[in-house]
Length: 209
Image (cartoon, rainbow, N blue to C red; front, top):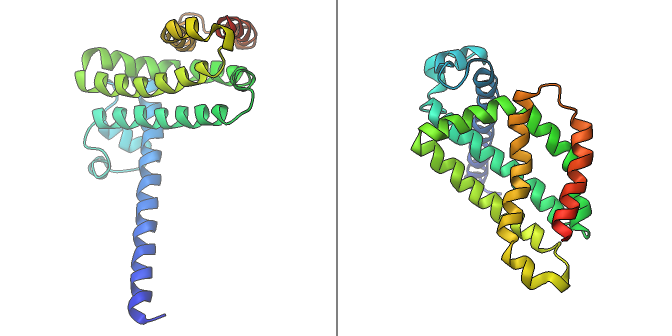
């Protein structure tokens, strides 16, 4: 290997290392910001507070995000990526319905754990058109993937009729989980295990009808 090629390889490795470190720092900032938003709300948490909670100077955080709005947008997109990974895993299973039902308990707990943060994001989306656009666009992507899952579950004999209400079933399925966020705030003593058991029955009946 020539010295020139060795130098190019070294530069590529350095660039990848720097990129990897920058991405890790971005993810760490998002995690720190999530905690601040939970505790103080979106408007109550300042960039300096977020930076301080992460052991970073207020000026340094702007090297990664230019505003709290940009942080929320990154959070929403990260959540979408995680959702798409979970959906892809279900899609790869032979029995899609069984695989989907197997994720219900985890999904219930995740919604409960994220209730305060997600409601903060949705509240800001209701006031901020830019955040609303990000939330709506990511929801469209996820909704399309969920519809594809449901389409693979529908009984063949009801295929034509199920196509007509596929969008409604997709909306209801997503609403069942979205609604748990509100219930978790209104009823912090909600029994997640029992909710999960009943939710599995509801989902199974709805998707097989």
